Image 1 (cartoon, rainbow, N blue to C red):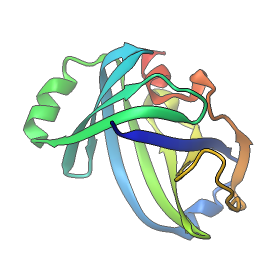
Image 2 (image 1 turned 180 degrees about the horizontal axis):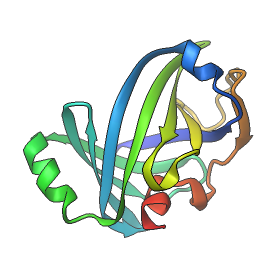
Image 3 (image 1 turned 135 degrees about the vertical axis):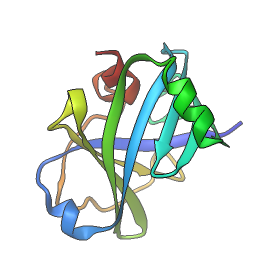
Image 4 (image 1 turned 180 degrees about the vertical axis):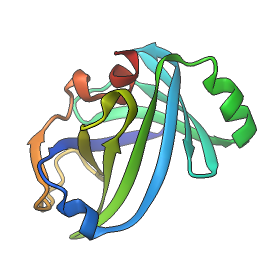
Length: 149
């Protein structure tokens, strides 16, 4: 079983843009928005994935992700619950970690959050200058919740 350990933060300024080494256009939708098991479809640039995520236990949850044909993903997105999420993901390397900074568009325009994946829940790491309040575990900032609104 795959485990995801990540922490999520609000972003307080746009310094991440000059620190970014790459950016990707992402659209995603949800076939299931149940908190016990969300099923997400994502198209990042020209690659598609289906992802199943279990319920959060702090910063840890079960996650399974598989590549799928992009045309299948586009068709399945038509079955999505809620709204389709659009965002630009900026990749920032800071210290020994990779940060994913999501700049949302569409219905969530103006929201910018940063995530870091960790090897252990208690792992220590330096915070980049653009990091603000931690929102790990706050369901208001789950992408599935943003799609449901």
